[in-house]
Image 1: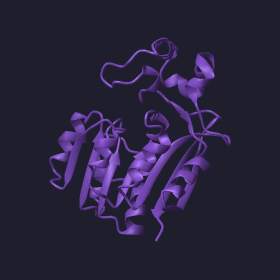
Image 2: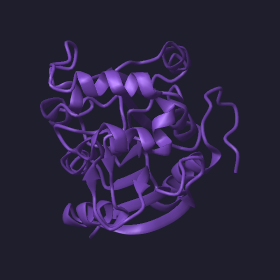
Image 3: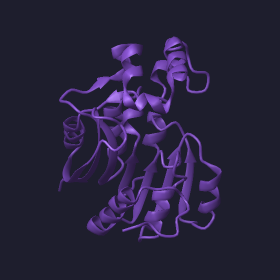
Length: 234
């Protein structure tokens, strides 16, 4: 089903995941983690058009297009925050569900698994889409070095010069984020094995109700795009 009347460039498959979750679990409140970058809150607006009564979009920067569309939704809150700030996450209200799209592979300090656990504590349903590394072991990309990183298909998003400059500044503190440049979320950080996402969710008291492998799309043969839907066990 194609998302209608949403000006953001959202992926129909990901919009369908949100719609399926709403219909399956009767979701009335939702938090969209990192919901602005590239899509301007599009998945939240889709959720609001499909029965969600309370929503919040979290991101390090709320885009102007998100702000413009949000004016039509008094039941929507926009919050600018460091997505991994433990204190700010703890202070969030509870929601029925969290959308976590294209976010986990970027998270360091806290690492992706702690990051997921922090948000899992706030919801009963997790709707996740992640670019997982094909293999049985999760690892940090930067640990394999600059040459390896540059050889990866996903590295084309950033370009050789940008990646090389980032590696050269790895030990410097990022002035806005207050952490080492090697740990910032602006680059792909993790090759996550899909079994580890399932394991972490299970450890937080969730069962896996839905999983699909969308394939590599345009990331080469080392990345598969996986969709997950977890619901808290009774």
